[in-house]
Image (cartoon, helix red, strand yellow):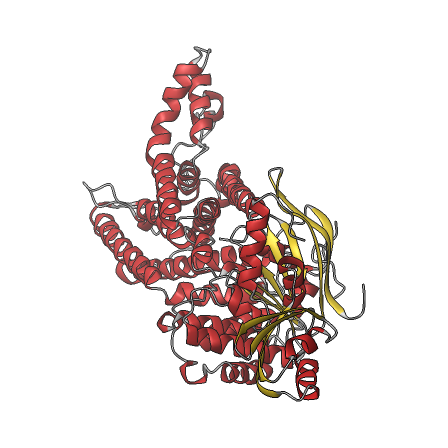
Length: 316
Length: 313
């Protein structure tokens, strides 16, 4: 496996009673990357995750997590990987810190190390003040954050998060995504699954789109946009000047320029052409009023992809 | 395929956690009070009865366990044989499906432990809790017996009472393993509890009566001895029957056999004379082994199913 990849999956397959739920998926997650597994419920995301953790048997293909085989060396994998299950549960009668203490013991942390790390990680996710309250008083968002605290305490190299934001209100979601981004800053690789696309788009470096046990699309959001929508970037530009449209068409990477109003054009491009477009406007003696880029929304890619699929045409 | 690391890594942590859960739970407290109150009632009855009726008996102390205050049929032993399964089932019926329903199972199993440690830990913690309660109860009975009868038990009586304690723990183990097996099979704790209790009632109350009927209905032989033996073997499938027989042999030293006695065996025997402890133990040995084997079998069945079960809810 390549030194930069923390997870490598080749032809991973899961069959229940002869019915394949995951049909030979392959992908890899790089060090420090946030990788999203996206797709509708029942597409095989959770099953894939459980196989990576050695919690579910692998029917075919192989997986390597940090170089370990989850089938033969599940303990080595689980020592280094933190897992936040879908709708994570805690022992409701115990306090947040007691719940953490139990898992810390299972991880094999010594007493002093345990207490420091529990305090530290609860502090990090903003649960320090409620550390001694029983978990049954916690909201859904607080439980998710407690789950993330557990991963922090573990000093995991990979965090695997299953539907971390489902069922959360917008503010709790924002808080959670903030913590997940912090994980990345600590050079933790993140593998997360979700069916909430717009939320995930903002933090994922790359995504894999699951559909009925297969990976339908894989790449950065812009790449997927190019594959499915045929174009990667929409740049909105407002400027005053003569013959700007013609000038802009000559900028490398620009596919089309479309008038969207007086002094307002929309540029379709293969890459982010804002700098070059601005330079072109200035060079043509125009006055640049506004310049903004809109990456294609994952929602749009997603719905367009499934539209195409059901229409019988292959999008990519 | 060889797995890396010990299957029992983390066992101690799980046992401690489960123990603290059991010992602080309301459920456990209710069950303990139930046992203590019932046991005291039975013991009080036994002592009244012993004071009134007994003349000379070399094993007077053991009568504490097996005497009922007439006309009621409730002895200390009969209370235990009903309440011990109840407590064991009460502790085991939500052991695994409870973790499923709280959605803690996948989180716990994503820590560096094997499923083995979780299941072993839960079973051992349950058995340990039961043992602690039973030992406390046993000491209570011995102490009260000393106090109220004013008569110290002799060495053999103590030894027999101690063996009785160990057998009771094994008996509890059977029901605990059974309840845990159902807690693995059924996702709903209510179903697991009902099925466990139903099976307990069936095996304890109905099966001993049903066994002879089944034998008469299906056995081709008309030999009376064969029929009686077959019915007895069949009824021994119930742990309650086994427990009853062991108790009879251990706590009642005059018991010479747990099956039919042949005339040839009685030649030269002094009827009503107590058997030595070793002989009583030999008489009850198959039943004792049966109880332990039952526990192991039920646990292994649960273990295999749990290993193959999917973690996701």
